[in-house]
Length: 437
Image 1: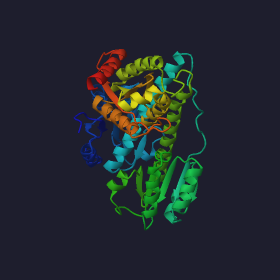
Image 2: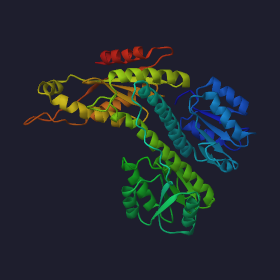
Image 3: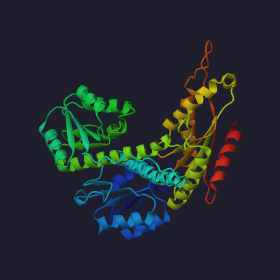
Image 4: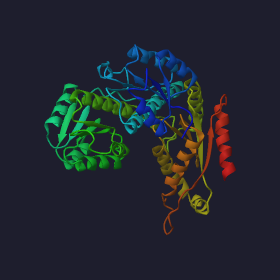
């Protein structure tokens, strides 16, 4: 467990969200508490915290959100507001608004998604600046302004129908699917921003749909909400560990549940837009034509901008270098050009195995580099070893009458030190490769 706090809790006392804080601490999301907005501002100045949980009983809580965000600008600061007043706040004041504290596992899941999205949105602005400076702006897609699309899967029930009506009243397009089969037909036929699954007497159909969504790479990020007949029917930790974004009981007001689903759907749509914006760089004339990865020149330029952004936002930054190991199989494949044929596929695999906000580059034919924002060195090494392990399980064609060959990587990692030039950290990561060869 890290010793550094990640969450700022702003609350006049522990009565409302004290138990939530204890649960988050137990999950590794260490909290630090301020009893006033003025104290919260000072804490944000002293600590580079990732997110805020705000008790709306604090005086001037809604206005205080703006002050908290301005304190850490240009870093994005996700805010979860909790209290009966929160659900009446205008959209956009808080990223998540809930009338009562959620389960700790749910809060951790939602906060993790918000933090990663905030980092990705920061990366979009940095990448736009890098490409614009080189005379080729990113080809960003137009924002999707159509109604939010929500799949409602389950047998008709008065509570479930009431929730569907509440979603329609919020401007959503709701598609009903009475069975898991029709639900998956719809999910594969059209895009959805969220899925709400009716628990009914038997949770099995809803759990089946959720499990299927999590096994599908295209459906994985669509937030799934389980709507139960009542409270206390199932282990909530188990549900959140299965990947449900939210769990609501039927005795929760339909309008509040609908607002929670709408917030999840909006967040998902924004995440999709950010991902598309970042992926649009691969089709640029500035990237490596064989892999779509950044060229050495483009990576050096962007790494300098990321490093300055990390300094301004007080976020960590790590750089990874992946070099193809010169194993006997690779040496043999290199002779007849089979390694050269495999390298574009390897580069494409690298780009798919990184997170949305990460930047991958091809420094030379068989050397790749990654810039991992908001990532400490040990975590960067875990990510790099995972990428190397996945690619190491792939067999590449070695020509007629020859067994396929596999590619192993030598990995180097360096975390940017205070005041360290970007070129120096890249050099340290490259030397780390040699030290571990």
